[in-house]
Image (cartoon, rainbow, N blue to C red; front, side, top):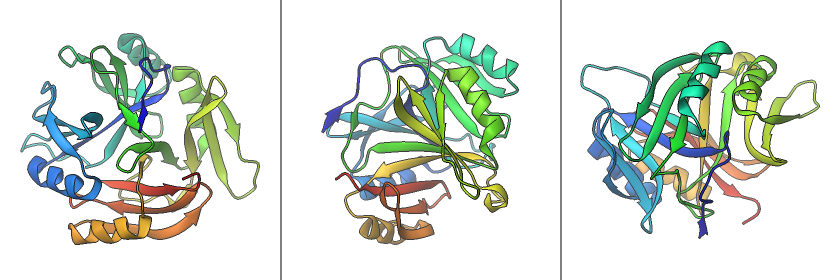
Length: 258
């Protein structure tokens, strides 16, 4: 099991969280699927728990107020050293700040925003809580990818806000850019054009490591979720895109490096 680094370079995906209607039922789903346990976290935005693997924090799940009806989706948080400054740059580059900068107790400060294409993401200035604390084992986030219509314009937004270098796939029919920090790939942008689901729009997709993609996909269905894209071979290994019972989509992957 790999311990996550103490300080996150700005722009590094550092946390993922999910806000749902049924907090208890969602805990049961992910606990059965990934082996997560839970403990209370900051509740500035309502009831909230942190998911743990072997006592190490890996993700967060919160509860929507009963009168709020927002899309249920995993949110990728990108590290920042200054949430206030990041919010200013987001606005100046055509993005929208929906929440924050907001203090989350002693844990840190957060911003929830959307890029010019409408994809929601978070920015996290860690204090006592710096983000996901373990990696490289089943049940942990392993990759984050923006699914959008086309990458060229939105790439400029993320480059300006977080200082990424980009590496594009040179292909007439494949629109894909990898985001790098200090020469290391940390996330990606995938332009899918008209294949973008109409009911979801541009969105960040979280990839979770699993030991067996086919078995995990079947388990998702057993637990009340459903399969969006069945198990298949990809460039990084075998993967499938699934959704939990409230409709939050995520990708499960068995890395080819395992």
